[in-house]
Length: 112
Length: 114
Image: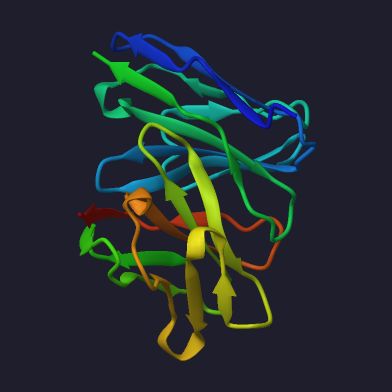
């Protein structure tokens, strides 16, 4: 199993550009989530999904969209990038219920 | 709403000394609790978790944590620190529902002095 994969690893955007961060898992996990990690603020939940076709907002959803058309994929879309979205983004998945989350390697995004 | 507080953004201990990283949570019902570790430029990996049952939970790399409902705490300990323990540690909480969010604390960076 590849586990949780994220692409790209690094990305530089200009303010106002849009892009999609990709996340895929091959473990048939129902639950997937997106976090952003900023110094001194830990991981903050952006959006999460408990299964295909079901998504919900986390703590910091503004400026981000998600969809979940398949169990495997959970892309995160930045609609109009802002410097405040400069961060490291992590995708995670787990079996719905009380299981542990498996994290991807992260995407480092810089918005200039 | 659930929340997690980690006391101390940076903890420094000598090699061989006790490691104590503090985590307190707020929740209306006893939640599921987790500790994750993040090594530089990597994703997070699970150290240990509390779901139900025994309140003292043992994890990987010699770490353990004790769930204390009366204190709403889940502190992480290791009797003897090793240089390889230097990393950032995150406490996390979620509710019982399968649709519950998982909320992380702000993290504690652990440094080990030779």
